[in-house]
Length: 388
Image (cartoon, rainbow, N blue to C red; front, side):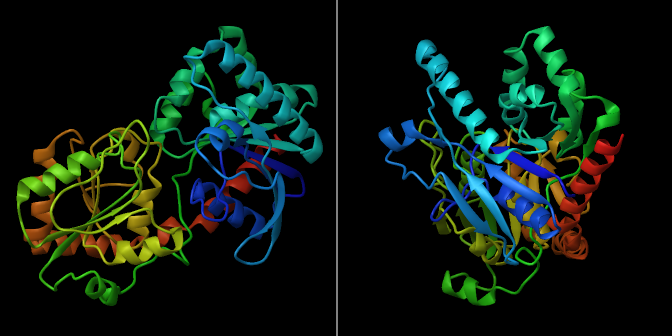
């Protein structure tokens, strides 16, 4: 790809901030394959003022793991809830103006929105300069529905006509894009999330288990994600409480979120807290099973990371998991049922034959989740659509 691609995302990792790592991993893989990429990730002035978040440099040159360079722009933005209507409108105007200035500086050939709302913010710029637009659709909450709800029929029609291609992380995301009239069958593909398989792969973490005080006859349950209701932290914590088994230990990788705190408080927690991305594979490989009773996802990066480490999964029996989970590598449950989560953990722990089968399958297929191959397919898809 010899055209300049501007990837617009809500955030991007920086020193001490482990956010949107999945975008960073994709950027690394695409840049390493020769793509000319500039990342635009606005930073909030209001968060700096009221939450004490540190402002980062508005432009920086960063390196992939393999030493390839790319630029990251972090234009200032303001964020207010929709409840503050006049402040919300002022902020939206300020944000659009700063994003447009940034795009003018970058002068891209292609706009790539991560996710739909990021592409929508740049649509006027793309229209003005007749730029192709691509969208990564991975929404796992109500963001897509809220975006569609806020558009008129004419706005939605114009927006969809501007979009050259859509990369969905799940068949469920694709179904929604088609249902809402944002994309068409011929310009939409499904590529489930993947990970850096040089980092996430099966490994022996006996030493970490010993450091955490885990005995050989203990069964370790791990969780990764924000400690919020949607991710099912409390459901899992309550399920472990219900089992009341001193040999069940747990690892909770994540953090609390203001306004939606669901801190796990079950017995047997050997680790709890925010975790460096580079250390997560160690904790996953120290686990026997990964559990995520999530209510909604695009395609869970946390589940893919566990599968890449060859760890069997217990998660939701909902359509967003259909592309990555099946009876061979997981037990699917009702994410709102403490009883079903508890029973699934018990099955994995006590049914040695069942667990061995799922573990074997997970390890055997762990190499299928390579971000390098996913990046190659995305680049090929973009090139193909530009040639149409």
